Length: 338
Image 1 (cartoon, rainbow, N blue to C red):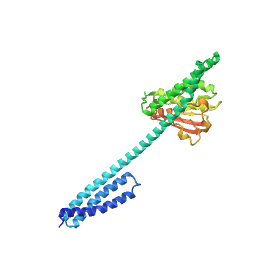
Image 2 (cartoon, one colour):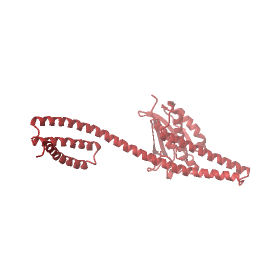
Image 3 (spheres, helix red, strand yellow):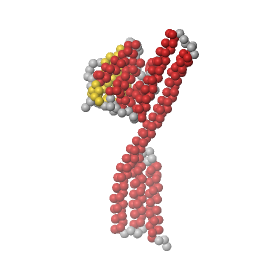
């Protein structure tokens, strides 16, 4: 004769296994649903297995009616608590899963950006370094000996060196932004003074290109930020605008404030950015296609806008671009001084 304990175990197994099978099939059907639904289904399967096992044991006369209702009440209360916990934990797991997925996506994008940057640096440094080496060797070997030619070579070497220094400086700034090592010294910054200084600094290059740079009248709010970093944002935007604006064109700077905070805009005359390229304007080393293809050394290194975006976001601001005739308009939004 089979002992009572073994009989109870067999009854419990006989009742629980069908519930587990149904629960497994249900989970397969719910695999496309959220984590919360799946966790809830798992806990519900466990609770129903206990309930069905208890009912089966009661029917086999191993439990009295009093004991049955006591056990069923305990299972019901514990089951409700378990299901509520499953909902809470399921939502937390779902949120964590989404966060981890987004983190992995950001990491992959960052790694892809790093690879592109390394490839770009190796490509763009090769040309000026090769030119410098050729000019130095020509001077050392006496191939160039006429005073005018020597002065010209020295001038060109200095220009190439200055360009490489700017490129290294941009790379250093970009690495600080990506590494999160940028520490801002926040203070009250007047956008009027910021724009005035930046326009004055860019005036010589603008005049050489015959591009007019002017600031529109209006309200010029103050913001909370780092003067040095915001000045760099402004210089990069002006340099980009002047670079892509044809001769006899104009670059217009404006500022103001609204319910969302302070804003600063730079309008150029580049002719517009292709719609497919608009989302990529602030990518590292992106120089554009078609209308914004760089011409010679004046094309820039392709880091200015990426640095500008990083510095603006470090101020908890936002930078965007849109096509607006006769070119495109960059808008920087920053928190106002409280």
